[in-house]
Amino acid sequence: MSYSTEISRNNPGCFLFVIDQSGSMAQEYANLGKSKSSALADVINRMLQQLVIKCAKSEGVRDYYYVGVLGYGANSGVGSAFSKNVSQQSLVPISEIANNPARIEERRKKVSDDAGGLVDIVVKFPIWFDPIAEAGTPMNEAFRQANTIISDWLSKNPNSFPPVVIHITDGESTDGDPTKEMKALAAQAATDGNVILFNLHTNAESTNPVSFPGSKNQLPDYYSQMLFDASSPLPAFMRNVASKEFDLGLSEGAKAFVLNGNIDVIITAIEIGTRPSLQLR
Amino acid sequence: MAKYKYKGISIPKWGNDTEENEDSILVPVEVDNKFIRCAISDGATESSFSKEWSTLLVNSFIKRSFDKSKLRTTIKNLSGIWQKKVYSKNLPWYAHQKLETGAFATFIGLTINLKEKICRCVAIGDSTMFLIRENKLVFSFPITSSEEFGNTPMLFATNDRYQTDFACSVGYANVKANAGDIIVLASDAIAEWLFKKLENDRLSCFTIKNIMENNLEDFETWLANERQSGNIKNDDTTILFIKFE
Image 1 (cartoon, rainbow over the protein chains, first blue to last red):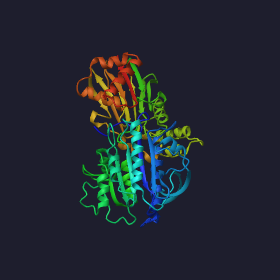
Image 2: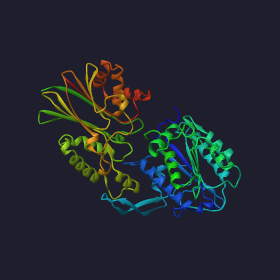
Image 3: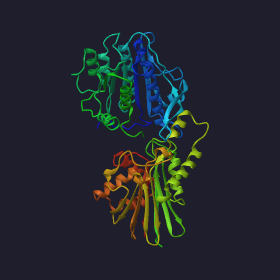
Image 4: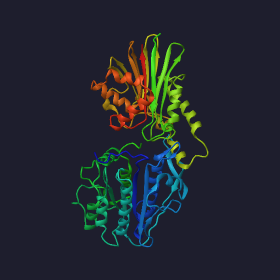
């Protein structure tokens, strides 16, 4: 049965985020008052925080996962988007991420006071990834590098749980059609199954959003159809997470693809993509 | 007074060190010359300091009351002890945040009246008690078949905010044993294996006898083979046998 390998310290899993850092990401989400790049940075930082806490035990953080965040934007090109505190390897063990946030911010959060009211509390929010939004979208080069990163990982870890790659973008490539590189990436495989490639397109206005479709019939244009074609089908365990935790009844052919998603849909997709299929060992 | 023999074993999941075993076991302890008490507890993998929690639960069973009317107070007091033990100013940010959620563990405890061989059981989660007579299952609690095991059992929590209502999650049962009966307390991985053997009538008289009489090394080898074959899940494995003579 595919996608059933145990994730352990002897056989860790990996996540690679490929993040659009082009100039258009400076645009604000309607109703949020925050730029796409800032909102996405918060989402990635929170995801890293949750992953660290999941892997934390009494003696420290166990390296169940290696994580990479590859940013792309013309002025800074393509490269690791982690702050300088974290080593600039393509995939970093989660313990190193845990011990090297760039800083820990204090943010206020409203929680229930158990008497029907809300109170402000201060929570610590570690930061590894700062928002960047600069001109240009070298998506093709980003996926060429992603292919190399995943190929290197699989050559060293052929029996790992198949890598999950989560791509988040708000626009079209400016350095050529990335289809070939995306399809090559989704075709790479561990013994337990193919790489799972999510293509998550986000839009400031979130007009006509489409989430996890099974066909491209509803998709408006060549670009969205291209992203759909290049995305992986969601494996059964991810469809189960979508159903049990997010009330999404997804058909067997549903793809790891979102079009015109707002930040909440992007968060849901990342949650689905980063749940382990089995309990961590 | 009933005479009995017992054997208690706890082996960490393959790939982990002994110190990383999050199960705890209390082998039979005599109380007031009339009763014995024993227990096992399975600490949740995704919480931290769950070993400390499972150990506190089983050790406290000797003297503290787990009766319905006093259970909330008992768990609250134990939670306070756990918090004093694990919190320190030098913990890194992620340890602090993980400790806010707290630790979780299953629990099953037996109080056995040695004169009448009546066993009173209290349980939360999927650690299971079996009463076996002539290699047949007479009684099990709280799980009744191999199909009931899943990944999200009810648990005792150190943080009251995450504690399920005891009325729905903690069970109590009584059963009477006979001479020659075997009582087993087992954590979920080996409990599920035992159910499958009993359901398929494949529990040979040699299996339990072998486990009780062989040395620890032989049991570890047997367990490694069963895990390798996929017959037993790779998880911390704890089992306590009590045989009435």
